[in-house]
Length: 201
Image 1: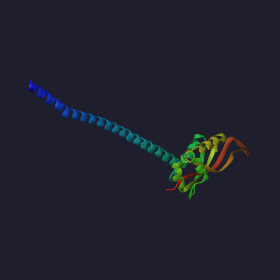
Image 2 (image 1 turned 180 degrees about the vertical axis):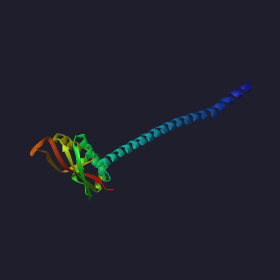
Image 3 (image 1 turned 30 degrees about the vertical axis):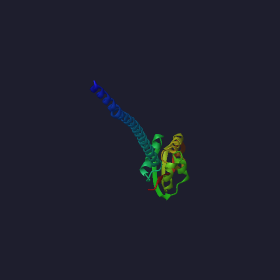
């Protein structure tokens, strides 16, 4: 009986002196671990959000750079300019008769260039517009109707690459038949000179 009481008292002492404090410490550690895990999860989420924002920014920045390169290439890109003029003429039923090309030296940014690119973000174009701008001059002869030519001019104005019209002459097509001169109906020759621009390296 006395031995049983001793064991009981001993177990109570051990419980209150050893087990209960250890249990309390374990409970505190579990709470600390849960708090740290929650903090870690939030930090991971924040890092993933920042990574996604950086990725989105880089994607948008690349698109802006690509757009600027189309508006103002980093080289004259003569073949591209001729191809665009030819494509616009074909889209509007105009015969592309001839083209002459000249590339001038670099100069300051013209007013026309600034006006055509102002719809883009100026902060992204600042460095590009501070570079010297080269001019590519093209003169071409087109044949077709006046209405088709008006559409051609409208599309030229909204073309991704900048084309400024420098001169334009319109001549009716003359048909000489049996010494009689008559004007062909709705057929004209359009001699047009345009300037395209490019950035210096």
